[in-house]
Length: 289
Image (spheres, rainbow, N blue to C red):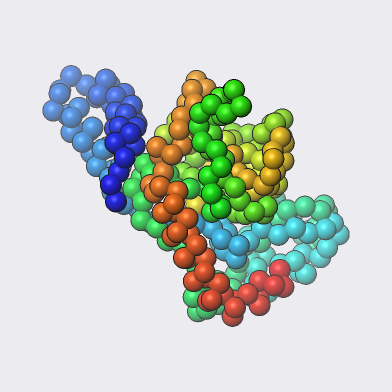
């Protein structure tokens, strides 16, 4: 696949920005400075495996499970059943008391899978999509239908991100690793998750229906952060994904992704279709959640 020259230039600028402080502070010995810079550049080129959350297998705080919605006054044993859920982790992750027997409030809870449930998924061939990416590369955050708007002028104003049309309830994942800065309503952007990425940029995931992270959470590439919708000022269900520098300068997210959108969509659809033919055996335990 031929990489667009603009994309290569952005990548080079990113690497240069990352390595510049090293060159300044590495000391008087130029050999040691260049050596450190070369080592850091090499780390960016080394491929790592990334797994992408789906409807059956999701992650939170490094654990595999699934987000569920529960009412109040429901017995924990009914929600977190033997063989499906790890009760100890369920209490810990959802910040419940060790002696708590009922859920005191309605809302979202993360249900971490027990070893037996994970084994059942594996036996049935159900897993998360695995990709080999380099450290600096970004994932597309949603498997949408098409890009409906890009960075640039729209209706006489600057449109600061990309809009991907996606059915309501589509999974939105972290494009890259980072720390959650803000979760909540942001006016015209609707329900949002703002993430400070590992490279210092800030990503906006906007118009969400639900968010599955909280302020201060560390997220990984491919981890579910929420589901798409059309909250705020929106003409239809879609994800608005925006990237800025710490100073608020708008960046074009398409310069950071490892694949053009058309190739991403093709790969994602092929995987989803393949997964649909393999998850029938594993779906039965999931239906009880």
